[in-house]
Amino acid sequence: MSVLPAGDSVRVAGTVVIIVFLQLLLPQPLDVFPRGTFAVILMTGLPIIWIIGTRRGLLTRAFRWSMEAYLVLLVGVTVFNAVALLIAVIRNSSESPIALLLGGFIVLASNMFSFAIIYWWLDAADPAVEAAGGSEAPDFLFPQQAIAGSTWTPTLLDYIYVSFTNLLAFSPTDTMPLRHRTKILFMVQSTVSTFSAIVILGHAINSLPN
Image (cartoon, rainbow, N blue to C red; front, top):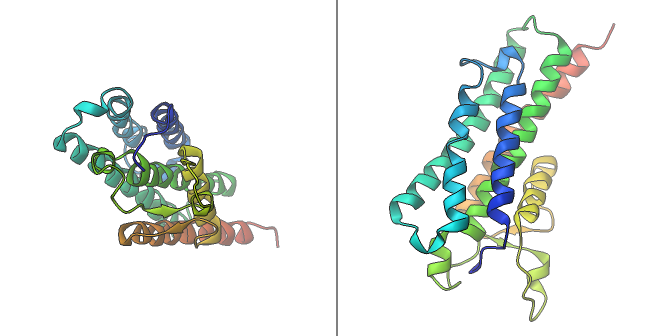
């Protein structure tokens, strides 16, 4: 993509706020570090996203590295939460089954929103793509782009949809990942969501009255 859709940086900032809120809702067994630690760290992404929306012409290589480091952080938090959920269930935590199930759904929701931001950056917002004049290979092929002469441009909501369908179907649906880095991210997201879903379903079944 050569043009960042208008308003997308604001939507991404709002999505980060949602992820932060979800981190604060995690039940105690999943909150391994002091409550809110990850939430505070994730808030560091807000000024970076603000710069994307207001100072695109001034973005430097150091800024791009900081954004990419933040994306790695998003993946790390998502994976860590899933591992914490698994450990809490294996240890037969004293936390109520409802709390652990809620934690599982929060992990899945964080997974969806975090990877949506990552896909958005790689395919639409990275200034290196714009600097290449759109000649850089895209990360995704949306159905709308396959129409001859189409000038359609995906927005953040489209990447949330891609992330949501990959999370539920554990595979691409109508939007195809094209580059190796995107396919690797798809595998990571599907792996995390698979383990989270298995833990949620397994714990829900075990919690049923005999």
